[in-house]
Image (cartoon, rainbow, N blue to C red; front, top):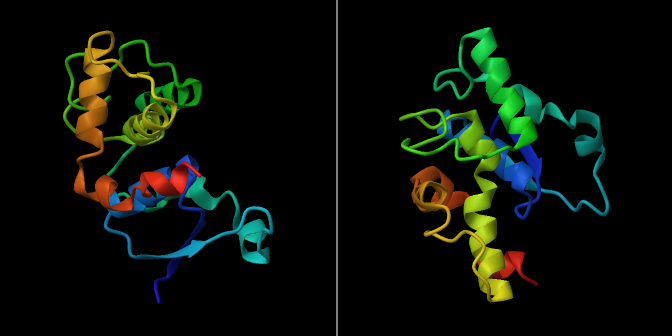
Length: 156
């Protein structure tokens, strides 16, 4: 049994962020599916420990070392303002995947799923070429791809 327990629901974009961060840092963990309508005592006791994942496992840092840069990453993640921050870059932080990629990463899968369910195009490659390319690349990253819930599970 793993020392780290991820108490989550597979449909949650917030859970996905934590799971991706753990996988990117090669942290072994046990995934415990949680019924959010009937929260377990374990979840209530330890939530929101997810904020500590980025600070605890640093073998593959997702936040910048520099305090100013780290605060900027958190600022942009919080505001989720994406006014073309990705243009000309592979990831939001440049060549390496980082914190902001994880925060905005749900867009890549959820928008595709919502587009399919609703029969409309939300992330148009012509209108948002950089973001569209990033989203397609993001969901092809092996760690991300293997942990994305099946579309049919998201669209009930």
